[in-house]
Length: 142
Image (cartoon, rainbow, N blue to C red):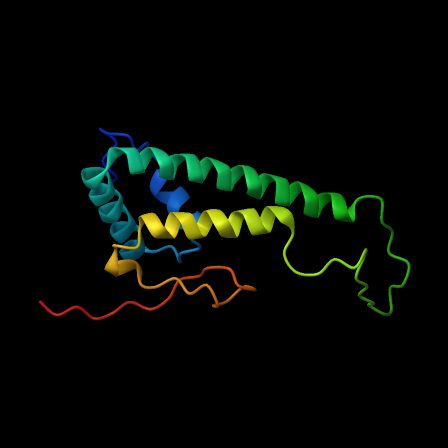
């Protein structure tokens, strides 16, 4: 099945949803996401527009996070090659601002796709420091 792009969805939006929700890529997941996206558009075209906005916000936050991570390494020189020492700089621990924004957006996206039983459950207390990751799916008998 391919993503129907005759409505509000555009080519590649299915991959953007998979990446934003941190889903493992595969045929089953791709078909499932595409089917859920079709169902969402049938239920509410306005919801599709909001999901697309969230995907744009997610990518913008990801770009900021990548820039921050790259900037953290600039101007630094390896001075102790035989010993690795980790230091907390400025007392910061946990997620950065962009990472918190990405997690918030991911949660909002999940709420739009919560009706999709084939995606399983996204566990807010799951892997990746409270990030949302792919859960397990339930067996549905017909």
